Image (cartoon, rainbow over all chains, first blue to last red; front, side):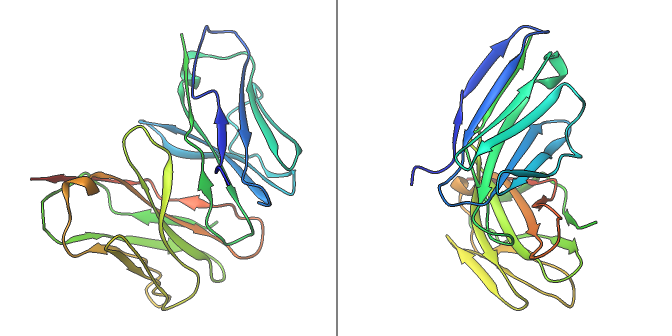
Length: 113
Length: 113
């Protein structure tokens, strides 16, 4: 398996624009996590899914953020409208079952100017 | 809720020194415990794991033992190398309930020659 695949690797956008980050989890993994990492706040869990169903989205900073998982092989994290404070590295991770290790993608470095 | 506390860094060591990074956790039940490593510009990689009390996880010379009585999972390595310089994260994933994969804040390790 190729591992967790995220796209794009880098995104630079202007404030106010819509941004969509994409993630393809490892096949057969039931759990999918979205994290955000910044120097100031470290690694923050935004939302996680189990069998394509959102379980906990309490980490989503505000209504500008939304995440979907239309099927077992694809998830998106959307920011609309984007703001400079959204600049961060966004990671997607997947895990086969509860309690097992999660595997991370390479991340998307988002810069909002 | 479940949480992980790890020693704050940065930690600076000379090559071949002994490494300990402390990690303690709070959880209901018996979670699985993990150490992840993040090299500059990369995603998090699983370093080792332990799924039950007294288990010892090991990889690349690193070890950690799941201590239920002290709720700890300290990371150790007998002789560090410059290539071990990275950020290390302790994490837990509960085996039941809806608690997500929880990470500590990370400890930056710098090894100097």
